Image (tube, rainbow, N blue to C red; front, top):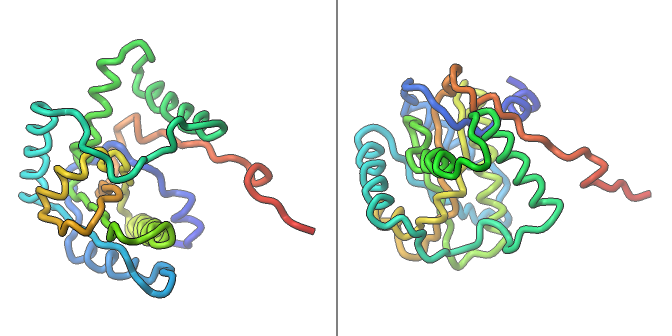
Length: 222
């Protein structure tokens, strides 16, 4: 697969089937992704992988926590600026409405929307889950490095017939995740990622987010 094909075909998958992810292949792709650019070669990414029984136990623990104490943990960082402003607010609103339209969930059905959002915390039934951390002493440059690692990994996954969904929602529960994983205190949770095979029957996987035209974000200087 060409890089351009992987980039075009990659999308955020929100329903996975039961096919497992080969652990040997996953290790290989995680290793290959480390060739992502890294300023000063700091390689700031730190990753935890959950599969099999470990993922089952984590899901059960998280579901108990959400049932007993659903309020988010104190945040290590803001996922979006507050308040989110235009045009970015509009992009986020439209992709959300497009997803709920596919699912047949109206704006007035708050309970159904909350129930769907809660599926984030099961990794959409994916057989593999990743958590990405970075040392909290690092700055914006190293967070950018982590993002480039994540993109490199998602393209490699696509090349090998696997699908993924990067999930910033896990940044709402950094304390719970870090405690369960026994992550060192100097690490801050950036996001999670669901990995597996897209369920071809799930209507939500038809969602294709819009991208702004080149002229809206790129200027060629004469």
